[in-house]
Image 1 (spheres, rainbow, N blue to C red):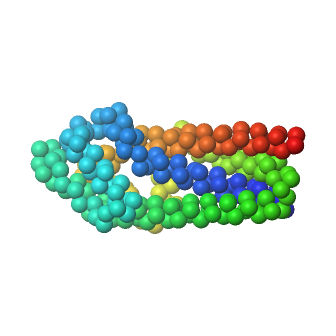
Image 2 (image 1 turned 60 degrees about the horizontal axis):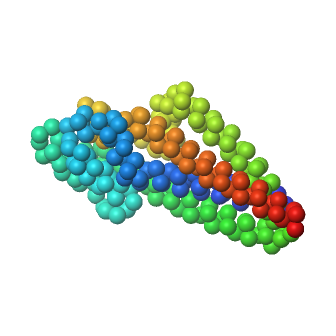
Image 3 (image 1 turned 90 degrees about the vertical axis):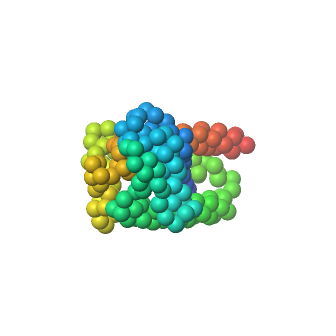
Length: 225
């Protein structure tokens, strides 16, 4: 029972950390600036760097529920126009709902993890960190297998992975945008999303590694006490 509580608490924490890493990458303004410079996106689209970042901040504010619309007007190829068209706007309604649901899920998982950790402590204070270490390894081992599978899939066929992701989480094809008419798809090429996925994996792995080291140290101290 104690190992089960520890593993369940660990798995909930692991997924919560992963979702947090997704939010960090997805809402980092600096990351967008870096990606745009790397791909020379502003010039390719026909926008200024300032116009491109203004459109991006508008989009991120919308996803974070800081604004109710995606209306942003800037100069594109020498003409003033709204950046996002109707299809893109409808797709972002779905994306916003997904983000908001993910925030709720992250918060619930964090609370569940905390409650289970408290329950584990009440069950056995003397072997708390050793039980937690065992549960962490069980949960992390299973999760790392999943991450390895996703990483290999992304490297081998990122387009296939990305399409399947959309089919799982969206019940329409609004995410299929025409690069000839859609500014959004030109803002975020496949390489952009590949870098986000890799960034999420690296951030999560770093946090998981720190937790693993900390648990090992605490478990040794507990055993020696």
